[in-house]
Amino acid sequence: MTRLLTTAFALAAIVAPSTTLADDYKLGALTIRQPWSRPAQAGMNGVGFLTIVNAGKTPVTLKGAESPAAGKIEIHQSAMAGGMMTMRRQDAGVVIPAGGQVAFAPSGYHFMLLGLKQAQGVGQKLPITLVFDKGRKVRVELIVQLTPPSGQAASEHEH
Ligand SMILES: [Cu+2]
Image (cartoon, rainbow, N blue to C red; front, side, top):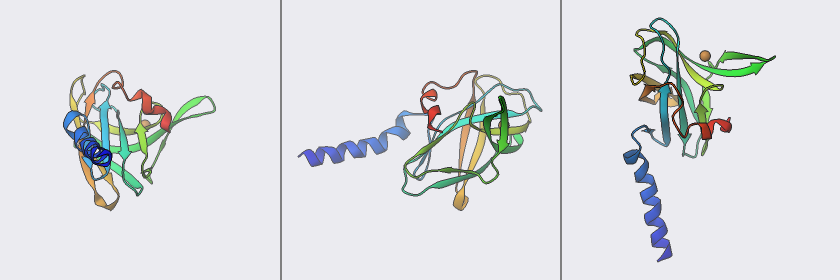
């Protein structure tokens, strides 16, 4: 009996997230959580933040991203160097470990949206397509907002 109940709970846990959280996107074993961006002017550079969770048994590499809303997207990592915040391009991509997650969040990894084609106002949605290894892609929408989504701060210590 106990074993049957456990199985039922496990199934519920697999089905629930995609139906209850509108912000989440799925690609195989990956879940992309809470994509968001900040207000910016046309022609300026924008930013993209989100969390990628890998529930699979193999690491997955995020190779890059593309969007019709920007001239180009680069993956950057912010880091403190000699008391100054610097940004470094991550041209080799970012590995999402098996059973782990990587947060793209202020002061850490972020997507740099170079040359925004339009101004981004609060509440707007900006489509970007994440490109993973083996040519796998998923399109998500960054929601433009002034402050991080609630719940994201908790995962910032992960990296
Ligand atoms: Cu940057």
